[in-house]
Length: 304
Image 1: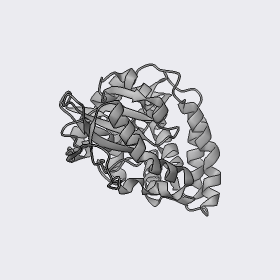
Image 2: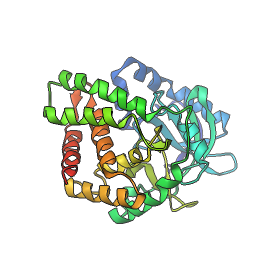
Image 3: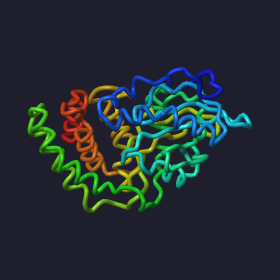
Image 4: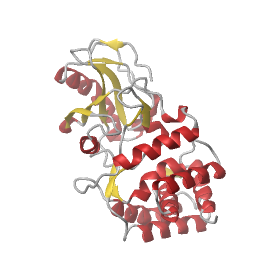
């Protein structure tokens, strides 16, 4: 992504806001956070002596802007919306210490503000050929899978929560898809949570938009929603994401390549993919049709 023209500091103009944050206007907490952004941006800019630009337009859970430090170093300032999924992003980046992921340069936990290495040119992985993108992922993922425990949330706990919530979400949305799909997802989450393999640090949302072209390394990972769990869960976002090819055949190809080359249990990956796809398949009481379609592809891939 190309950095917009820098702004020298706060002024009387309204703060530019990407449309991807509009969903926050629908709740009181979100509106309060949006209203706080000018002050938080000003405070972080003064704290770290930054010149900031207009925000990047593709973030839906943070306000992220290109910036330049006093010595001219290009960086990224990220102001997180406080939620549990991103609560330990700074700790994950600190543990990885730049090995395959962007470097954490500074962190203000009280203000949920992160100062990060900037990826330049910043093109997302989905701009690469699908086979090249899978090569990149098979090279990066093992570097991220380091032993970890506290303070990160546990995949086992998330699986239990998803399994418990899914039937009620399905009922409240008017039973929007077939019962067998719901039952298969709940069964997978219930069975997979206990008895996992070695517990490692996972990037819960490692789709191709969260890997950017960079200079220090050809590609770097951004925006972790960290969990601790088994490796099989670590490829789920890449398997079910459609930016590297849409349709059941493309999904099977990603599944087969990633599981074979990383030595993962194919059936466990499928179970996790089905469970998380539907767990993340509801919004504001309604189902997301695209997620249901992907879940059907996942279920079909398990039948061979």
